[in-house]
Length: 561
Image 1 (tube, rainbow, N blue to C red):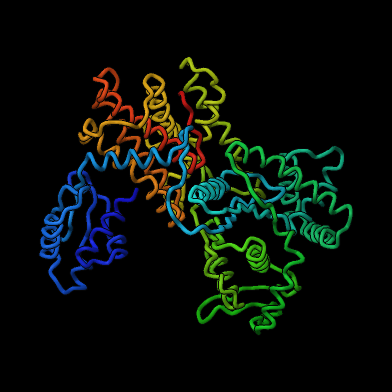
Image 2: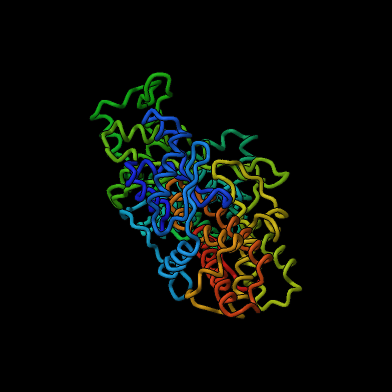
């Protein structure tokens, strides 16, 4: 149900262009109506005074009102629309009932052309710890997968593994030198050896030559080198999959850098054919234009770079998945890298280059933490952050007399970390705080989950269908909740359009706060039957909206807390 579209279509009666109105119309505070239309641009195009234009348009609307519209009021250069509350309430209940399955799960009713969307995210490095710095790419990418899937698109989740480079030669040398006295079965052991290598290499630079020799053996498919290399991958994936399971993250592809070793020829050949490859200090680059640094494709020794592999990966993904959008959820430090890769694709003649998009995000750290470095060994493991959050949650709920405390502590503890990561705009740097994340009263994950559990408790006491009498819900407290409920799909579409899960996270907080004002101001149970039934209708709708909204941001919705 989209009342913005209804208004825009309605205003075509007054010779206003539907799409222009739809782009301009805004949500309004309840005191200023349900929606507001700023008319400044429209009036300017007609060379009219915006204040007078708003007055004249409001008068025309009031003379030709639709059955859902109560009145239109001019306010400066705005026209504010006030709906007939009973009509709007009934429409909202009918729409949400239509889109809700028996288990409370939403069906998508938004008509849109279905797309295939490839999302490259998380992209962990083999033989390196999954630390808190990987949190944002993992949960932002996971949330975008949920959002686009909800809207009916085909989503391909890609974990582009960092599984190539001289660091593997370093690690093999470390294993052969200091680790052969016992089997290596954990990331902790791999990390300790990696740190030891760098400590020793700082004192003896010849170790780097030996590491390069081992990496050359990987490239040459030496059996011993490949055996150790594949063992590093096995140990790493076994460890990180435990974290992905905690976060509810799954991928369709784990094709990493090594997968594209034999797929870069097309990149080099096409660049040569189009005379784009230019020699520079014995290396080969693609010029980006005046005052722009070139994109390096081949080093002076003929070795490829990240850009070469990402070009090959993009071409492979288009051929394999025929994507409509190809998204890279990678930190903003790689802005220049992706700008260059996308420009090279364009210069190569691929008309889909503009469908490749870098979804940038900020950095993440812990309060009082320093920069993270696997080389120095000062990493904060994501599994430790999640475990600490779960343990702290257990301390909070241990005396509440709940059944299945372990499951609830897990869902709330993990959800707290996920929500904290997604609540602010993705481009902002994030300093993680356990105290803030686990606050049950603030703008947090536990607050969302607790509000959902409160709704579940009420529904267990008095369940109802959605066949309610709208006249019992015309007061401001109830009506404000219903207005927010009606905007669920608009919010999801906005989040998808902007690749911004925080839009959903903040909407859910607004819905919780609005519902809790209604809950404390309006007695729900024990009223006359029609009133209780109508108010319980709101409770049930809020419960469903919170559950479905939390799913879109990779959170579980426990029924009790």
